[in-house]
Every structure is written in structure tokens, then in C-alpha cells.
Length: 325
Image (tube, helix red, strand yellow):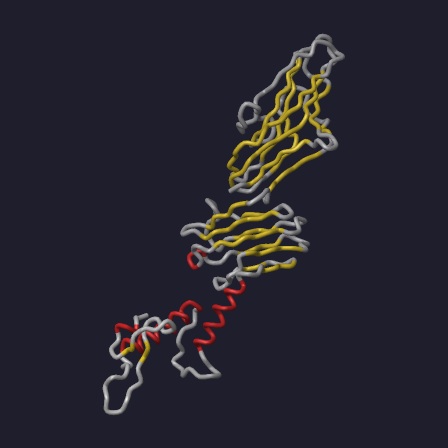
């Protein structure tokens, strides 16, 4: 917009009219402020800028008191601006975000099934940030990209599995960046009862299994392993770990120093070997493959007599993967 002081025949600025005061045309004089091409063009494109912001295209009809495209555009901008101050509440339904939406908070509640939050086109929303909350937790809120667009590094969904789980979602130039702001996304299998049917002859056994989605997170596991051979004397060894291949296959997921075969010697037929097993959380990129808790017992008097993995009340046996990216 041009400064009035650059236009001919404008009186000096005042405290209220800080860019100058227009002058009336007086008959037989040429000292009035001219309505130049530049001045008209400035006014026209000021109105067009407002309409462009609202996505309103000129329809080549006259502006009037009861029919004005400029008014329509202004109302849309005000409405969208006010919506920023409010959350969008979704009650047991799917929701699709539109390019014209300006909400910064979407909440899901009263869920009776998993529900989708469908993201808008990435290219039309670069730079936007909003937040999603699962207020229920009985079912998942599933963040779903459009077509082949990426969430973080994958063309995959991102779920909020936990009650009050919160995700921050930002549209970058090439992907949606989804960041949990708390423990929003946890996949876990657990039991408080024992698995008493494990093999006794030195082969690897699958105890429990978990299939997390594709993504990056922290993997951990916990349980208690018991073995016994009533032969006298007998030497037994207990082994434990996490693996991606079922059946008689050794663990092949490295969780650090805690994920190693552990052994103990039992010297008589009255001694059971009981080993607390725990792999502390370590960073793990899931490719969607099932993860197995694996265990085996070896006895020099094979087969052994007892081999259990078990959890207990308030101390369950579990595999857990907490997604972070």
C-alpha cells in the first residue's frame, strides 16, 4: 500500500491521519487529491488480498450491500481465526481434516471402536501444527495419511492407544512429523499366569509374542524362568531372550547386556533354578514382524522335569513396545 505522502496534493500528516490528509477538489482549481491509477489499484488489490486468503475467486459480479464477495471472504477469515481458539470435539466417529480447517486441537471421546483421523493433503498444509488427544482409551485413534504421503519415515498410520495420549502433528515439506507428547502409543502383551508347557529337551520355545506396527520405539520384556531336573546330581542351564523367528530358533534381537543367555548349576534333585528375566527398554525399529519371548532349558540328564515361564499378580510377564516416532 502506497504512502499518501507520495501522492500529489495531500495535506501534511496529523496525529490522527499519520500518512497525510486528502484534499477536496475545488472548482476551477487543480489542488485536489487526484484519484490516480496507482491509488485505485492499491485499493483494489487490498481487497483481492483478503479474498485470496479466504480462497474466494472474483466472480465478475457487482459488489453490493446485500451481495459482497469481499464480505464473504472477511467472514470466512474471521470464522477460521475464531476456530483456532476452540477445539474440535469428535464423539465416537471418524474425522477428516480439511485444508480450510484451522483447529489446533482435536479430541476423541466415547469410543466404541477404533476411529480414524484422516490427514489433509500435505502440500496444501505445510507449516501447520495441531494436536490430537484420545480422551477415552478404550479404543485407538488412528492417524491416517493421504495416499502415499509419509508419517515420519513410513507410509503407515500412527495410533493413540492410551487414555489421554497426546500427539503433536506438524506438516513438513515432505512428511507429517508425528511426535508423542506422553506415553500415547504402547503395544503390549502380558499375563499373570504361568506357561507350564515349555519344552524340556534343550530346544527353544516361544512363550508369548507381540506384533508391533512399523515405526521406532523402545522394546522391553520381563518374566521369571523356572527349571528343575530331579536327577541327582544334575546340571541345568536356563536360556532366555527375544527373537523374530518362531520355533526352535535362538533369540536374534539384541537388547544389550541384559539380553544374554544366563546359566546356573543345580547340584541336587531338591533344588529348582529360578531366574528373574528382564530386558530394560532399548531403542528398536519395528518392521512389523512378530517378536517372540523365547526360552529353553538344557540338562545334562536330558530331558529336564520342569521348565516354566511365568508372571504373577502385580508383576506380569510381558513384552512391551512404546512407540516414539
